Length: 159
Picture 1 (tube, rainbow, N blue to C red):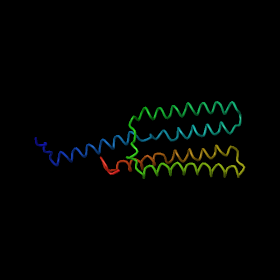
Picture 2: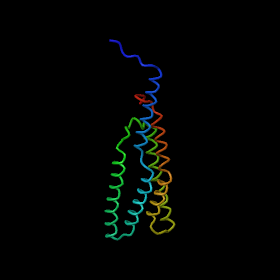
Picture 3: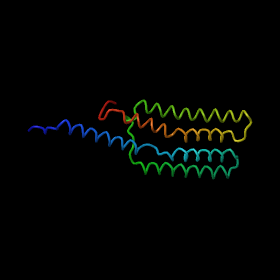
Picture 4: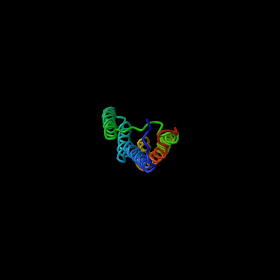
């Protein structure tokens, strides 16, 4: 039995469709823009609650943070059912995420310690606010970079 002959035009059309579907799946899997300021707000509120040094405020802030974070993550996970396979991110994508997180942590620590050495009140909250602002300003840029990394990888191999 001979295999059906596929024309070059049909093969090209199929390849375009595969690329289009992959681009759609990658776009759906990325973290939405509202996530970054929402997470930053939760972080700042939690840190401020801890810095009050009042047990009842720390307790309320902790519960509020846990509920808020759970809701935030659930909303993103339920809205975006597509998941990115690790091989699609590759080493460049993973390195970008790790570098991004390390930069945010360094920014928060440097800002917090600088605020403390300057004698400012609530230095940890100030450090967290700087981190939240940086996340809000740059989170979508990270998503854009990761989208580019994932959509530039070869389809069906080249891991």
